[in-house]
Image (cartoon, rainbow over all chains, first blue to last red; front, side, top):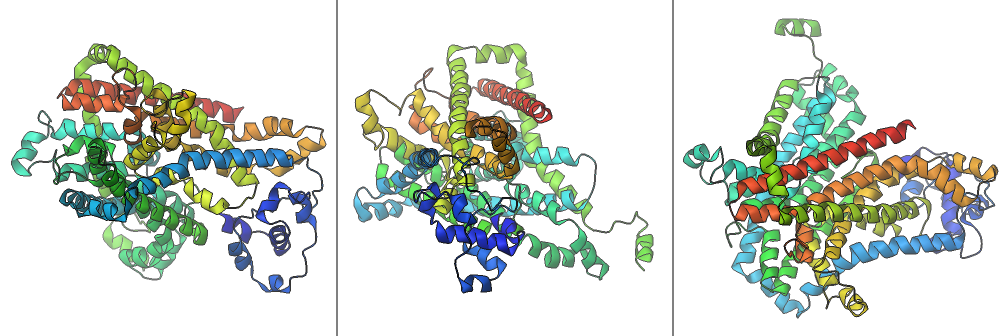
Length: 355
Length: 279
């Protein structure tokens, strides 16, 4: 998002923005030097020939933390449109304090608790057969759920963004539905269908086999809760990109499939990857919905999050936090990849994103 | 040439191919995974009738659970409105060391599995945890009380507010702030009368999203709540308890009530928001 903004401003302003960083280092932004950031921004750039030689994108990519507003006046010597230094410092302190207390500390405690009894105990936790079975089942469930939702996401986005038809808005709302349903209710839905008194169970029991308290039920529940992720990511992105590229490709004689695989797919690849990452993180970590349909049969229908619950309730804290640390690492990787994509390919991700 | 091709197909010319298979698969998959199963809940609960549902939800234990789920979610969303707005503000307006890192961590509750968040929060706030051991001598108990429920719900709802308010705050035109300042407004007046009205709809949306997520939350809450019946037992947990007792009717009644109340609240908030935008 920032890259986009930086690209659109004129070079002078970009350099002025850069100067702000050169003159006022981040710690200085709260006015600790006594010079308000705006005044610093108004100073002429110091002689830095290398800066002039750099291209726009290099400057833009070089420092993302500087928000450069094209409409921001360069002459700002009074503090009427900003806050007093002590207010700024106080707000930053409150904000970061809250984030540290509510986000960083829980994350840190996962790793500390997992390593509480040393590395040996930590790795022993993974040697247990039931833990390995849980990891395997989690991988299986997400390996089925993510590709299915990927195909669905592509189809839904293709139909919704490349064509006009009635009821499109309704379709988008319905795709969002699983987001607004409690995970427990999503699980309950499948119990009502495939449970002992469920209306589909007589037929499924005869023809397909057990669904509830078995792997198929877990996969279904996982698909349900991760259903909208990829479609949600692709629809706004493909809407922004329009249909010109596809029309050009078709008019040059490419087939529909060639157009999709050689024109559309490269256009949306980063957005797609982003959606897959979020979908996978949720698929591997889903707890509520899976908990309802799994039946908690150890070694058979326990996914990683369910196994964490069992270990925790049996006071095997090191084991519980060891499994939890794997999922926390997955979350960290997802966040890292997400920030990297936002940083490098901001223009190829949907600008309006909620999840 | 193209007309010949289209004419030979004998259909209306459509430039981009693939509508029928793409839309067909979309609707089929949507129906099989989401629509038919969800319709099943309403079918099942309609079998109970309004009185049947009423009888289930007015039992003291169920009523207490619903009150806790909605009440705690409301308080958590309010906490998030205050702190989430401050966080959004400092990320848009100020620079400080570690900004990019903190920015990435805001999405942690989206990425961290709820069960992991649940046991981590419990470890922190239990009487021998890092935070719990500080609060214990002061007589404040968080883990295994209703406060714990609020803490967990605050955790999972935070990114909704920040990520909704942030882009809107970034769009607020600084010209307006300057105009207010030149007209003699104090900074606080500018913030409360110029900036606040502009971001209010986004704050309301963030509140609604955060609230909706917290009401249905299960994984991160059950560990820290302690789950004492009628005291710190949330509605989703009660659904699971009813299911384990094979009381499918009771479970469906609670689920249907939660769906309807959430829907009504979100509808109200959407209407409020539309009203705020018109004003």
